[in-house]
Image 1 (cartoon, rainbow, N blue to C red):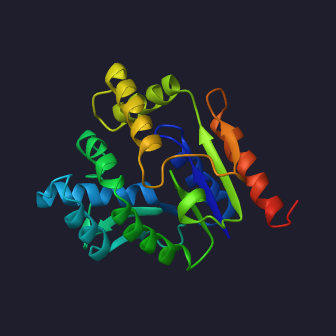
Image 2 (cartoon, rainbow, N blue to C red; image 1 turned 30 degrees about the vertical axis):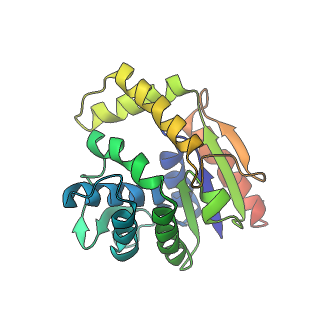
Length: 225
């Protein structure tokens, strides 16, 4: 079974997806981390964000893998071309680079192939921005998680502080708006709500309420009351 969770930056979809996977004992696939890994690798190799051919070749040939602790359903490490990039991909530098990289259809096509190959192995909760519309259009359950941009910026600022980075709210808010614009207006698989997705606005919801709502939907889909 595939549970597709989409939503804009800072909507809480990553946290929600991980907890849903843990509750249901599904594996968790972070597609955003895959795009971030490609963006980081491109930066390290000096590949320009306008060089679509080189970026597509990277996405096609540099295998992305996730590391799991024994018995765990959530990955603890992210690797690209054998390099551990778990921490390196969660920086403002990569934040700024990932949208241009992910905007190319050739890059997305290459990574979708990797994502489908991974998810074919078991039950997965998959999150991103086009999972229910482009990557897994036949997913048994699709959820679109969103929140007001001000709330998403506040959450991202808190996350940055927890990671020891500067949590400048105003800059983060502007970055959120820019990311929303880039994601919704790009030609290649723009951010949008799948016609059969359940939309959940998390602005004023407790995280546990969101998780429970999705778990209930999943169990209903599985025929479990």
